[in-house]
Amino acid sequence: MKILITGVAGFIGFHLANKLLKIKRYEVHGIDNLNKYYDNKLKKKRINYLEKHTNIIFHNFDINNSIRLRTVFKKHNITHVLHFAAQPGVRYSISHPMSYINSNILGFQSMIDCCKEYKIKHLIYASSSSVYGLNTTQPYKSNHNSDHPISLYAATKKSNELVAHSYSHLYGLPTTGLRLFTVYGPWGRPDMALFKFTSAILNNKTINVYNNGNHKRDFTYIDDTVAAIIKIITIPPKKNNLWRKNSNTINQSSAPYVIYNVGSGRTVKLKKFIKILEETIGKKAKIKYTKKQPGDVDITYSDNSELKRLIGFNPKFSLNEGIRNFVNWYKEIYR
Image: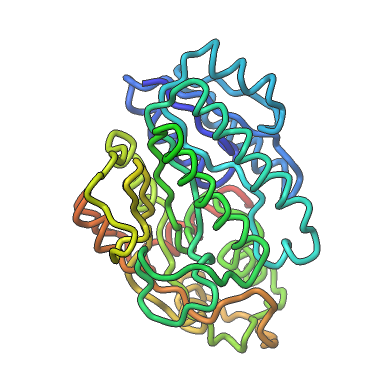
């Protein structure tokens, strides 16, 4: 298989590529524009790490460059696509909406058009738990309503799911959307809580804790997430002529289309998360509690039952172990 990973210099794209490159039968192509949403040096370190392998080709351009994108598909006979290029962040979407339109909507359209044109065997793309929005039924199931997102970021991810379904229906393109739940771990993003809190505690700085620390999140360790994605690559959804639109399976369709949750299946209050981090570092945090931020949901909690039936998905890493692995990595990289 010749696998294309978009957003390969990003957190999840990097880990996916690193794992696949260790499986020698894969040829991996990575695309990333190395934008400066966060520290560009970290992205370049990820690419340098990946290029220690011999079976990767890195392409440095934006996926909205349709000419270069088509060249990669055609020249390298891409068979599978893992689409993880996106503008992340809920709060940033409020102040920088066009970044999300350009990357998450136009970029996705550019990618899925190529997948259709070059008859890709399976497109897997990153959606988000944020699509559940105002839904208060817990835990979230992938067939729950997701029509009320409360941030532009979530809305762009929902739009990806809708476009994917239309392409699966019209062109028979197998698409799998993954609603990811707060993925964390080594090489993580500097704008995420674990990275920011670790840096602040080690450098004697104050951390801002929103919603007075009462948020609950389904923290999912990166290795568990990547293991699930890699198993799914060779299991594209198929047409199901027996499916009916009034059924309780709105995450599926008569088209070769499906959506899965990928979470730990546990939800943890942010206050407890910080306590574990303090114990791991061996140092108390300086905390400033603040109000809830626009676009933030109160709770994320994943029901993984469909993925468990499909691939036996059973997350292995505890939150204590995952935080310890991150802190050790952080201390090594940022001495």
